[in-house]
Image (tube, rainbow, N blue to C red):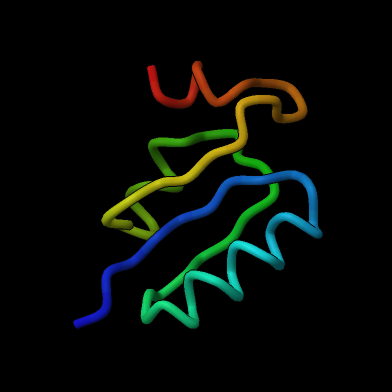
Length: 66
């Protein structure tokens, strides 16, 4: 079973690069450009790992991790 990685990033170019690299590495990747409710997002996707940008519109990665 492939490990699932959730990427939260608001720059579409960075999202594309991360998805290509991780998919080529054998991971299942879900990408989103923002989240209003991180708990709902985590419950929905159930990732093994979350990679997030620190500076996101309306919030930051530190608050998401908190």
